[in-house]
Image 1: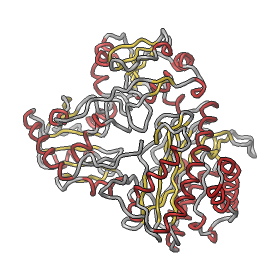
Image 2: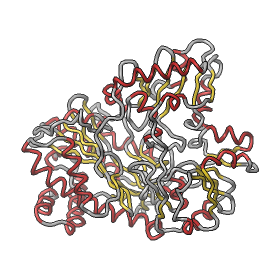
Image 3: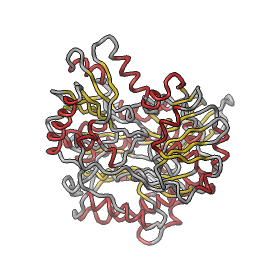
Image 4: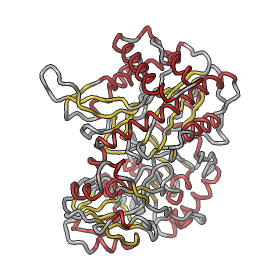
Length: 587
């Protein structure tokens, strides 16, 4: 279905909700309460029932949290959301630039002596609470686990999601869940991440919009057997797929069950809720989620599926861009028209299961809002002479796509071309690089930024994130950013998306998905890796300043466009094919 464009919370609804929360704080003798974006499963995206931060504050970004005290309510947001938050929250809430200002430092500044800060132990990870406790050491500020105070005041809170599990066929997974469980088992692991459970058991669900992951908890034992905890009815129809080595339990039996496990019990402190550690006590031992790296390193079947999905998706994108080129200069389109038309072209493939996230359609100044989501209230016209940034993706049974293209409607200005070309040069630098084994994403991030840095410019988001195989469009731990310390390994799929954003004017982002592959042997036969491009959709040649390109950059663009024509052309006909031929002509 098409995305909806209504706002879940309007700014004017925030103040009375904030007042109700403060009354609840006073009743429970708390001086503060933390409201994270997270749910109990610590996935990036949350169901409506878990959208407490959005309900309270109005802020709908995919990262951030609130810290509510008696006289100030801070909404902590990173660089992606500093424009968005000012549009979405009332003056009763104070935006806080994070991570530049850490929560502990803010609490030290704002709290009175002896303050007690409440938190829901289901919604904060073990590491998060440990780090905050450590940073507050030596102060008289203490943390206290408590029931969720937002839930107490949210009278019409939706019911938790309860979608049934579905089987993810081995023909797309490339490996049976019996083999996966035995391959990654080592000790007794508590697993709480939805995409880890989905990958491990070859199941999917629709508990979270746009991300086909199941809400459940699991315990993976050393012999490969699994105890799976889910709400009643969720596993109906797939018990044969799960087999005798996967035992089903009610979800509300999870804590009681793990309390009976003999130690040690392994938990990933980066993703496991604090309440699990509290329940296990001394039996808890830190260890990475055993599914994280195996899931990130796609097998040949998953990579082949990703390639097929990207060709299908690329053809839909080309049809969309051909339509946009014909219609946008007439001056009659709006941002919502763009979203609906693009999702319609994807739906016309007859293989789209869902979009992979809410389509970003940012015209003119809205393009500078990094994660802008158009609503009926913000819906802007697509004007000639302005840039249009469209970031979108699809969920297909064989792969997940994510692509951004920035196009000009009509004629670009020299400034448009200068900035676009610098962003493109950064994207090309990542695409062309090869690197020795052992390199992490934080080593490569600067390659994408160097052309912008040379002009005194930058962008406030990572250059790339991991992407799942018919799973979450944002998948860890791989990435391309200053904080991406996971070593890159063959099979990892990442986005490559540098950008530039000028507040009040325009935004530019260019994004392809890439997969880590072995590189050809080099001069001293050192083991090297490289990136292979998965996304094939033309770049806007009107925005490229060819005079500043190096010969290697020109060659890359021409080769990329030739490959796009070769791969996508056979899937098109008529006006779309004619447009593709023009769009991929050599520079």
